[in-house]
Image 1 (cartoon, rainbow, N blue to C red):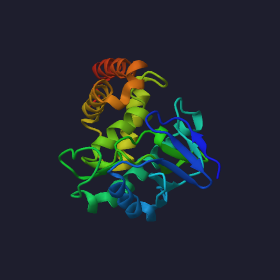
Image 2: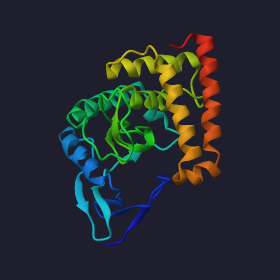
Image 3: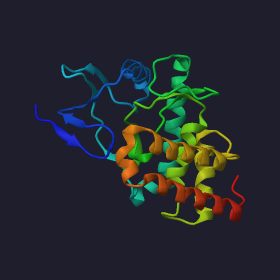
Length: 238
């Protein structure tokens, strides 16, 4: 069958073949597949079809609109924000039985409460009719505290960056997301800053991120760090 190259990933070559997606399978693929099978009843994850003769993992294709930046107006609604948070909470809760498992690509981050996706941003979420309906690219899944995923989603969706909205509206959206997830918003700003620091470190130190280094993504995130600190000083972000 014909292979259609899917764009937007940045690290791996991902192709669509009919109703499946094929991508390089790392040593962590069996653990990720176990996680996806456990999460399958929720309806938010791709179906696992195993490994093809070329050594690529084969997953079901999730139809819909991937939330590549800049997000369209429909994907920025409060309804979408709440649905996103509730989807994340359901995925996290269902992952708990695998918290003590080994074999993930990334090391466990203590206190390990759930198996985090690790990169649960809109560009890894599929939307339909303006609402999130699925999550893709699970290769960075690993045990971690809940806030590891929550903080990055808040950064992307509030957003804690100058792309749109006002500082006041961004903080209101951050609080709404945390409320819908079921966690306190207090301390979320520090968690966002920690996540951005990790992003900068990864881009600068991980050999796989050579394109991101060349495109100066680290400087982009650092500019947002300054923006967040200024917003916290002005609005007493917690």
